Amino acid sequence: MSRPLQRVDVLVIGGGPGGSTAATCLAQGGLRVTLVEREAFPRFHIGESLLPANIPLLQRIGVLDRVKSAGFITKYGAYIHDQESDLDYTFTFREGKPWPPWAFEVPRADFDRVLLDHAAAQPGVTLLQPASVEKADFDADGVTVEVAQGEETRTLRARFVVDASGRDGFLASRLGRRERIPGLGKVALFAHFRGARRWPGREEGNIRLYVFEDGWFWYIPFAGDVTSVGCVLHGRAVSSRDGGLEAIYAQMIARCRGVGENLRSAERITPVHSAANFSYRTEPVVGDRFVCVGDSVVFIDPIFSTGVFVAMQSAELAATEILRTFRDNRFEARRFGGYVRRVQRGLRPFTRFINRYYEPAFLEVLLRPRENYGILDSVTGLLAGGAFIRMPLRMRLSLLVFSLAVRINTWRRRWLGLPVESRLTW
Image (cartoon, rainbow, N blue to C red; front, side, top):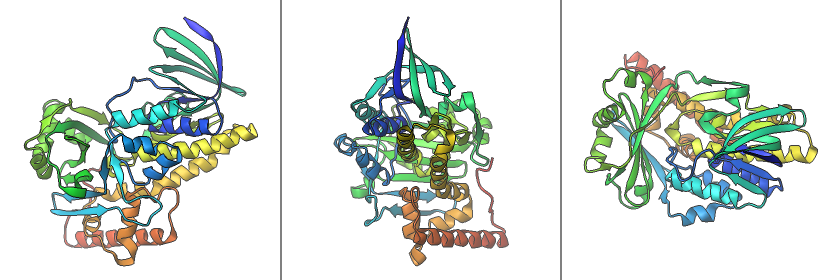
């Protein structure tokens, strides 16, 4: 059964953080938006640790009070432990920045629901859920889209499309290509536990990262007594081991002493989920009458919890450009060159850190931070997400000094005959 043609200004594909943010910003700018989400919420999802730079963004789109009232646990920093060297350090977010010295740890089933409800409540937003976009035909004047919802198929005529479909990459899979990022081909295994170890006071909500021979673990506490525990491995570490995902996951927990101790009295309460080859980039990310945001553009690596922040920040940046194109009634791809450059520039500091993170020389310097030259302040600011929109000259220079220290340490290790190669090179 089909419905008559419906006309909207913007069709947003995907109701996760990127899609909800885009729909909210565009509706607040006066556009009519149809938001299509394939899955029924709530639904399980990873990417559960927010960055402090998320908080001003949540406030700008008017949803911060709802997020605060949801009762999520507060995160004041990040603890990192390297099993090989036995070095560890807790990075505590700092006062006096454009972002607060805290963020939230969020079960995504709950957090995404809050964002989607907020978007759907905006005047001008129509939510179709669960529904899926089956087809999108672009022409000079707009886009004709077929949306399936249950047994019905409706045809929409939109003037613009925002692809926030995440890893699915709706437009990239049809109009472009996706390529893996060299050196970051990993597999993640993850589950939730009850009764896992907790720390007292302000440390309770901190994300904890444990690096070991085969990869690294995230350890994210939620309010109450549930903890998200995920293991990121080289693909070969999974393919070379016998047993299913649950057996391999249990083996990795046993091999990582810190995580094994934390889970000694815990009970796993979800299946073991997996995600493979999750580091990628897509091309093109903009076109005549479309823009991609969030995971539809790129996903680097979950090590620094950038996923939700990048999705929401890129959506806000895209919405600003889209509103400008509607004012000018010009929708060519070249109008979005500034958006592409800002996203690429924002991702660059994270990418540089991630590309070196798996090298022993980098971890040794990272876990022995110094206040000299503002290095610790700048590294903590980067981990808070503060380098995405604008990197002050002082931070840029401090990170250059940090990079030089890593390079010197690499030379030192090589001279001493110690390993310098990345532990998880493709």
